[in-house]
Length: 151
Length: 108
Image 1 (tube, rainbow over the protein chains, first blue to last red):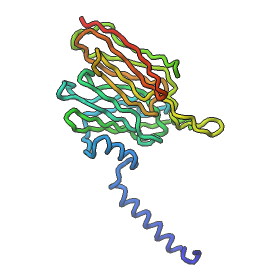
Image 2 (image 1 turned 120 degrees about the vertical axis):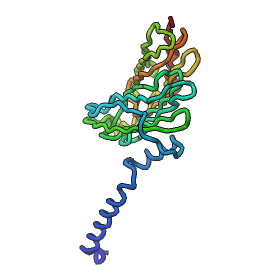
Image 3 (image 1 turned 135 degrees about the horizontal axis):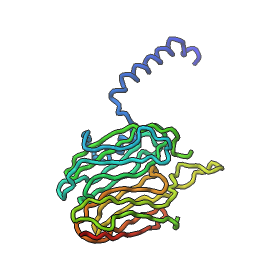
Image 4 (image 1 turned 45 degrees about the vertical axis):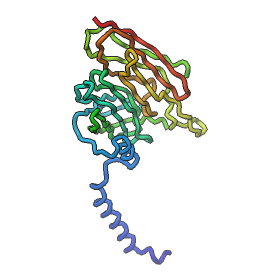
């Protein structure tokens, strides 16, 4: 075994890993497979468009135990054109799911606020499902000073 | 967690067709299932997993909660009121408990 691990083979391996790393990066989404699966499950494979959804969250959260988050979606909220569901995901939490809001035309406006826990600095993703079956998303990075998972 | 105390803030009156803001808060520890006690044993998950707001029996706003929601879950959302009636708020706990409260609104 010792004979096969030469300085040259180690260098080649390292270089190979480095190259795959660079080449692989642009093709990979910015988040893990688990969150990609959750998004896919929610959208049924459809690619969400950007716009209409906006996340209102602090740029820097001092305490990860209670981070205020607000979601608002541009929509007339009539009985034939409204926002049905909104899923909020935290890409860097042990479980990415945060909450799923279900609106109705009686909501009047598609806005909601809550408070969430964030384990570390990470991306927050919100995806809205419109009544016509289209999907819109927004992403926002929140810096967390003290994580909120109490481990 | 039978001591969970719900609090809601709904305006007493509104104009017909007005979009009002509702705030709700309930005391609950929302144990995430991620924490460990002093001996290293995982503290089991115990959270409120669903919140519902209905107006005169019609759904207005519903939320599925995950362990990532902070202790004492807070919600702020809006509702369009066209007639006088009652908002009914329901929280469902992991342990099967249901916490309820309601608020009346008068449309002038």
